[in-house]
Length: 418
Image 1 (spheres, one colour):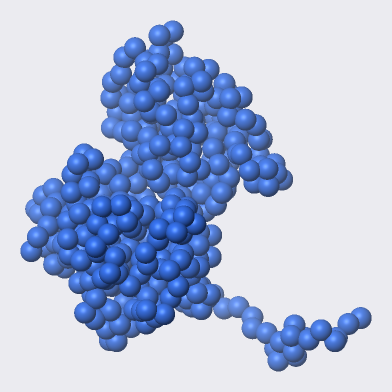
Image 2 (cartoon, rainbow, N blue to C red):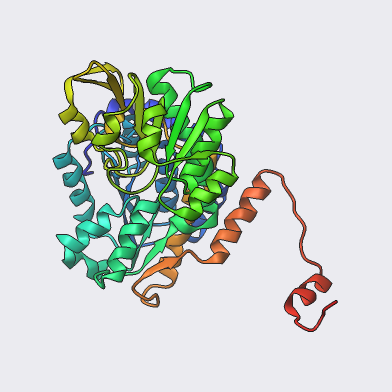
């Protein structure tokens, strides 16, 4: 079997952690049982570019039990859990091409290794596979019935491709499912980002000024969790509606050039580039800690920080100290990459349960509707979203009301008034 991982001897540790994660993934567990019985993906090749974590491992196992041939590479050079990669190869015979800390050339070699398998479906977290197909490997498009996209950044890229008329096959925006972005982005990113920052620094959050750059679902979750730990939270935002929402949620809102002067912790969650730049580093406090939890490592101008510094050193794992000419020190976490996956373990498995249930059912939807879908970025079907929500509630032992026939009739009528 063709694969490229760090060390196969790590497999036993990875196996235990995969099983531990699966205990909190009841929705995916239910789907896996259906897939094993029905084989809805039989004969299909799935190429996945996702964070190689315990939760992703359980998605890959589910897809394989559904009949697919599955190949996996990393969607970020620092997010791979090497023991998980080893376990997938050794115990589940799923080829993995991922090594934590791999350089850019290796990263793209691994992307191409997955594409060499000529997938019928691609699964992306950031749209790197789809982008590579459209830029360098266009001949593969004829084999592809569709793709799924896990994250906001990837959806932005794909909608740009659609708008510019270059998209060659339909894509399901898994990220836009309510059971994904509402829970994964808000609760998952909120908790795991704080986890990554604390693991990297062991610094106290309470009493600090914590600057959250961006108030989308990820920013909302992070701001709420930082406040819950006692931080004085400041939000920076370019969208007036989101800025207003942050104010109404009780946060201070100000431009980044003002926040840069008072922040103790900074974390970007915008999906855009160079949110924190040279001019902001120049006014930061001595000891300011800067992190990113957006998908790509472009939100912080790391090169600008290097240019300002007179010396650099790694003072702790995932903490790099940049000393400026006037003696101030700025600490960059995880090279400006996803701090929650680089310095910690990513989202809790109970949250990824819903995200990856969406991925699995979206793959089935693509197979069931092969050749019928318009070439564009599609919203995930509502029936999938509601099914996952219902399964999640059932797994939690939670019941809820249903409309009576009288209520249904009222809601469907326009004649019943005061």
